[in-house]
Image (cartoon, rainbow, N blue to C red; front, side):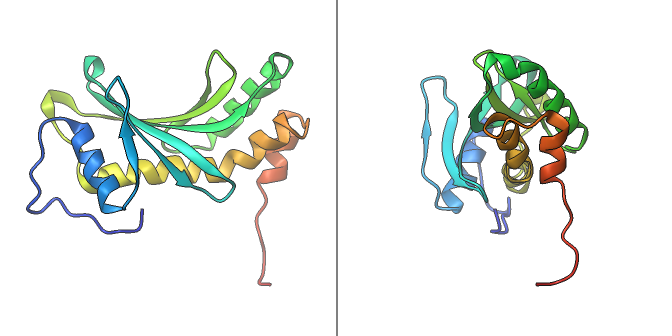
Length: 167
């Protein structure tokens, strides 16, 4: 999300998802609202297109962005998958990865908005950036584990290298 966004002269309803809509429209991104009111959209990452969605959880006053990695662990890989998630989450500053009951991998990042507060346009764009940066950074580790059959530590080591010098 490279477009500088400003809250100046913009008036929104009290629904935080209306602000998310404004950000997505400003970026010319196509989106839908599902039956629960969540906003869904797709962004292209370094490795693939990722499905993202924003939801407002009124009961805890939290705006969440979620991103589907679109890789699913087999039941026999669950132990290694949980170990990899723990390693990755220790290296993730904002948000976290989790495994849902069906074995799918999700990145989740939330922002508390108590007492009817609304996120700024920049905060909303930053949530999207955090999700995409985490997905792009750690997708290879998940791929090495799931499709490459690597252990959690080997999958993490294979994707966490630093490039030195210039090509």
